[in-house]
Image (cartoon, rainbow, N blue to C red):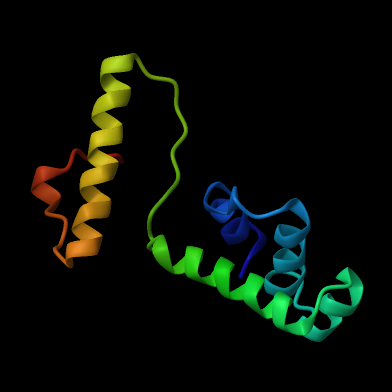
Length: 107
């Protein structure tokens, strides 16, 4: 996983402690072994494994081709964007595709 990929997951890792996020980064981005991460952090190998699994699950929940967008908008447009995001997530969970004709172009 690249540093950019890991950074894009950060909003989904808010419930994790800063220490656990750093452990996951060391393993998934820096490439150290889970055993070494356990030794460095003082956590058990099993706990480090659970942290890695949680981050990997968060990564799978976001399609790799999706982009995070952060912009300032008037309230009515922000509500529309939030609604579009909810609909896109719902399409993922129901297995339906997103029809390009029903989504405004962002490019």
